[in-house]
Image (cartoon, rainbow over all chains, first blue to last red):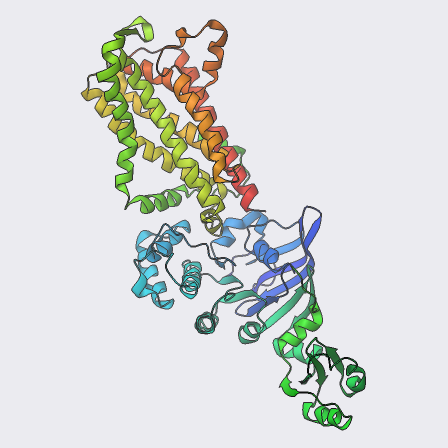
Length: 316
Length: 268
């Protein structure tokens, strides 16, 4: 069996049952069931503090679970941590590149932590620098690199052991659109090569771009699960009509049009009407005498699902 | 031996047998800063010359191990070797380790690989010992050149220096894991300075009144000094077994404590 594990479905890269992580008395992860299959791109979505990173750390075998079952590559992280870590690649939320080493040395030294031969890591570093488009910075220190370059290098570094499973904790947070698109391209390339990806993000666009399947976490629990399209179908409508009013004018407008949509929501500056047909709803609203300053009809996105499931209040 | 014992006490799965990869990182980091390493060697040698030229003419003969008459500089030289092994080890495992642990997150990155806390502790401590070892070789060569070694047993000064380095590097690194801000390094300096001065480094322990001698004997550096001084003049003593045991125990306890602390801090 290619996977070398001791039990369970060999195509399951990660399998957690009633998984719990407590810090002191507080449960950061509060009994989640999760299965990630070989070759898929799987996402953990959720606001800050939802338990995404704690889950990732348990899967990465750097944080023992408090309760429940967990198998990574068919093995138990409590017993086989080093063996599991030898076969996965980890991209932490904050870059922790070695500032005392050059770009090339970062890759070579990291490869040596995996016990790879000097000759192997020398060749691997060249290959990975090309992948990360950093070949011309090979012998520069890492500090002066841009945020996007550092992120690419961190991802390249996590690939030094040719991992079967990669864990990416908010891989594109804080990057400009160019850098994000370049990274997404690289991650897509990895997926094409058959690498299983687990990604945490609160960037809905990123989740829609990359993930085959995802779970939405909130307060340490999984509140929804499915493909981006199926989640949108289940938790939102096909379209969203946004009505924008002049400041102070939208009070009391909701009640006039709420029945026109499956669901409505009043934000400080606009009304959102969730509906199958935005055009028709807009006409109906006009017919009732609503005079918004501007209107927008758009398709529902994962962001609508996310906000519905995890609420609009600020979590920190 | 002590290290092997410490490894047995540690939790399973926290050692991958690859501390060499951690040492390799340090070698790469320092491969471009060899000039800095020169200073680590120069300092004790400058002391040695100062004692030769200055104090030597004032102090005259001192009674060394086994009642031998020694010049003052021959009396002090082995102690300086022990003290420089201590200083080098403490220097290497305090601020640099603190920085890597708290700010640079170098150990977090290592723990995402198969490496465990014991690999990190052993690797970092070993690097300090290697670096200290390089200084010690140079120092012993200078001692020999100045005619300050009186016995072939002096070749044992090297393993003794490595043992002193290992003991202080282990303890230094363990202490560093408890520090929260760079200003707290003053506490370590506060301990190291009296150790340097009062561990029978510059005068024999017989100078102290009987009632406070035990205090000197508690100092780990004292055990290094005694060991070195005996070896330099070629006088073996049963007490040396005790000296070695104290240093080995410190090394083992420090290594185990460091590994546990790294695990507790980073594998939560």
